[in-house]
Structures are given as C-alpha cells and as structure tokens.
Amino acid sequence: MSLAPPITCDADVAEGAAWLAEAEPRFAMALARTGPLPLRLRPPGFAGLLDIIVGQQVSVASARAIYARLVEAGLHQPENVLRAGDSGLRAAGLSRPKARYVLALAEREFEFDALHSLSDGDAIAALVAMPGIGPWTAQVYVMFCLGRRDVFPSGDLALQEAARGLFDLPARPTPKDLSAMAAAWSPWRSVAARLLFAYYRVLKQKEGLS
Image (tube, rainbow, N blue to C red; front, side):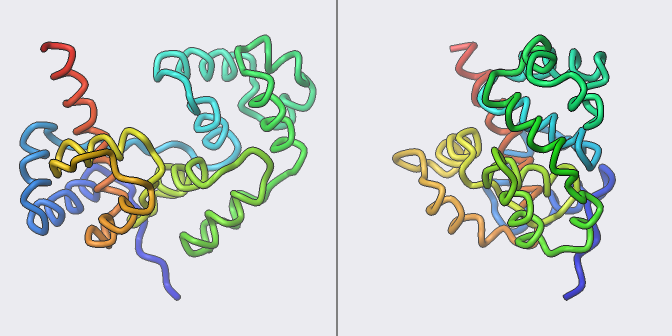
C-alpha cells in the first residue's frame, strides 16, 4: 500500500483545512475564529519523541522549559542520555517515570528511520511496543514528526473538550465516540486535530475573559 504524501508545509495544512471546512460547516465556523492553522511539525527521531514525552501531563510552559534544559545539556541525543543517567535527567526536570522511559528509549537504539516506510497503524504499533510509549504519544509522533495526514489522537482531553464545544455535545465524548466522529474527517484527520487544538485555545481564552 502506498503512503499518502506527508504534511510538510503550511500549504498542506491549508489544503486540509479547506477540505474540512467544505465537508463540515462547524469546522468552517471554527476556522473563522482560529485563523490559519499552525504546521506544528517536530523533527523526527529521538529528539522529537523526547519532546512529546516531556509534554505529557504538564503545562505547555513547563514542557518548553524542561525541554530547553535538556537540549542545552545535550540530552536530546541518546548517547548523552546514557552518559547522564537518571540523575542527569532528573536534574533537568524530568519526573522519575519519564526519566526511566527516556533512558529505556536511549538504550533501545530504536530505528526511527524505519517508521517512514510503515503505514500509520504499523508505525504507531512499533512505537507503542516501547516502554512508556502509549497510544497518545505514538499518535502525536506520527502526526507531528512523520507528518502523516490522517491520524487522530482521540484520547486527548483537549480534543475531546473542543469537540464537545464545537458540536454542542452534552458531555465530553469518550475516545471511542470521538474516534467514530473523526472517521468522517478522513483523509485529513491530522488537520482536524490541529483545528480542534486551535479551537480549544479559543475556548480557553473565552473562559478567561468571562
């Protein structure tokens, strides 16, 4: 099976956003409020996955600060992670579980380049097979580090809350329900996720003003 061309530039995101706006009027309404959607690509490989792991269950500001400290110390490279060990990672701000996962990832010498030729599902499965890598982390890596067009991390709470607000749902949808909704947004589910992330920020700003 041939893979769809990856998202590599703002024009690709804009193409997907235009398709979604035509397919779903509420997406058109959301885009009018969010403006152009960000590309949000990360570099593939160890550094990109590290960036995603750092961002798990912490604020954006905290994640950026911790990742910046890791990069400054050279700890975005697996060989330096192995030399620094648990204490070096903890000193940079990683929690004990995250430090353990990052060390395991560095020790594994995972073949990130091999992911480029795999289907979305197979790439996600290969990532999830590693310690500490769950579906959300793997899906976000495939979306933003490989640039895949049609991946949707339905377990993300921000996406669930954005969908609840945009589609006037009585409650936050479950991952299963949101995944079923997102089937209609193929082949641009990765752009739909970008749109809902952007719309979530609009909703939070509105809450801050009220």
